[in-house]
Length: 481
Image 1 (spheres, rainbow, N blue to C red):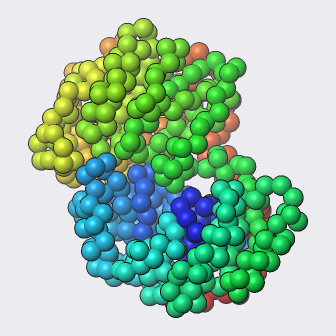
Image 2 (tube, rainbow, N blue to C red):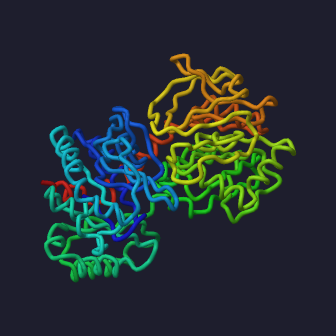
Image 3 (cartoon, helix red, strand yellow):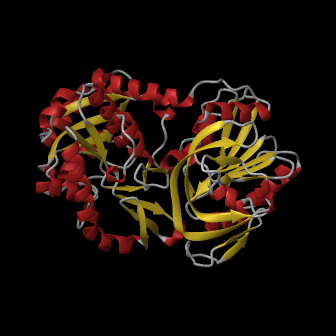
């Protein structure tokens, strides 16, 4: 099990790289994260959803995503708490304090998934959540030491030297955890090192001396990690590099409950496209070619923020100047005339006016549609693969101009009459190379025509090579039960 001294220290990345490295060695490997908190989710082969990071780790193992890889998923819904997803299905919504009381009852579901995976694999690589030193959350814990003790899984502690204070973080963890928890830790890794590694020789030695743990490696920063899907909204704190010579400028609206924002990763990777993240306190530049509204875990709440901060009017003005607007899932719903939540699914107002850029209306439903799909776009005839993950039904006159036709004949999405506003429930559309190329060219750019999915595979192979070089994988395997 790989636990961290804090959030975002690189646990997901290291597990993904080791999944690929050990799979290439001929082992049957499975990823596992007992509890995840993320609005970046993926659809599974068994009709559920899990954290995006575990789907990437499954891909590194060469297997389809399954709900057992992440049995408990928390999806924050702004001020309304988090949606609780167990074995891929929504079990309700809970505030933080209520969830703390609920956790012990979820350990059974976690252990059931783990045991199934352990029976299938030579090795299971487990990812912890947050920090191992959060002793205030230790009672009833299912995500870190609580799980490690219950399942008898040895722990490797990961520290991030790039954020500073890594010696204190590692040594401090040993100092504050319960001695029986500490006994589960078999060693440590220091991640994201930059510069001359010999300058940290004494640092590694000090951690070993003060904790009694052996080192499994000093891992240099892996530059290509930025090309992999981000696990959660922490990645949005990193500013995207603006490409001054790009022909196309796209604005992604990043509201507090944004979800599945990795939908835009293929556009970010295009050399001739500059993607800007625009938050509630930002101003929408007048020179953007296209505004993209991604998914949202709290659509009505985010729509309210969009209107209150003035970005809704900015987007409408952008359209009136001749700009393009693209709505994905929750973003599609916001583009319509009205959103209706009569069953109070999101816990806010029962209806709100949308931006009115599409002649459609959405009624939220308590049953979530979770499915991988194949479709053909109605404009251009591009064959695409994607997935749906939404709780709503959208209808209206603009649905007569659908975005795509699914293989079962179902029509998805809508175009405005002038074709400059597009809405769709299909996540992952930009990962389809032919469609993305046509989209970029329609906005006046030139696509690099680089296969996106092949690029992800290349990065995973490069990450595996990186860890083979800088981690003592043989020592890790010796510690596995």
